[in-house]
Amino acid sequence: MRYVEGFVGAVPAANKEAFRKHAAEAAPIFKEFGVTRHVECWGDDVPDGKTTDFRRSVKAQADEVVVFSWFEYPSKEVRNAANERMMSDPRMKNMGEDMPFDGKRMIYGGFLPILDEGKGGRMGYADGMLAAVPTENRDKYQRFSETFSSLMVEFGAMRIVDTWGDDLPDGKVTDYRRAVQAADNETVVYSWIEWPSRQARDAAWGKLQADPRMADVTMPFDGRRLIYGGFVPILDV
Image 1: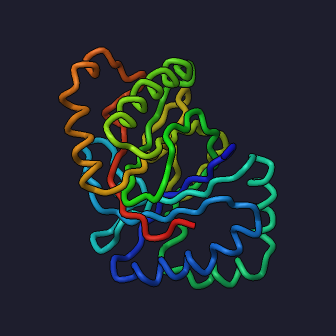
Image 2: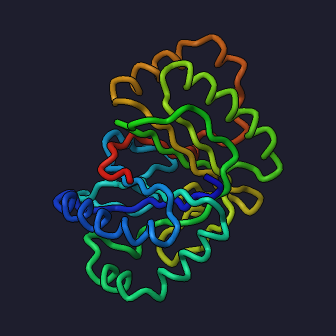
């Protein structure tokens, strides 16, 4: 994996199966365009925050569930070519006319991987995170990410991926920068952790909070604007 396209959206809870089916039907087309992995995750443990959270990031309504999704590509060049093909392919146009959610509130953008740890495997649960990091703190963030990921792998994480904002368009209704209230001198990071199960994830977070090594870990960003939540994979191809 050399490039990631990350998405956050809001889907009516009643449309869960329609959303999964819509994504599954599109997956072979995305693969044709160069996507090496396509994951769709359904909100399960998505807390409200005091400053920012996933629901506010996509203006989710009371009857909607947040989805956290991503494409993995072999390179940015393949991703850019894929997006051009998607814009002109009639199959994508037809699918766009029948989306079971409000595409105007979907957040999307391109990210450069800065960390990819773990052996991977069959994922049963995922943590998703967004944060605004001062651009000048990229090296500090890299070191923070490496320390954090090593602990999480020790506690049972199958894979941890951290990515740095690269191509994040401004949206008319929602976008990544607004989601985390990013300042002009900040960059948005998009991260996820893959777990074998919700139970393994909950146990790991408990161990992390109790580990004395965390006392020496300083977050090089504003944690009050960190967005996080737990998700159940409904498509992983």
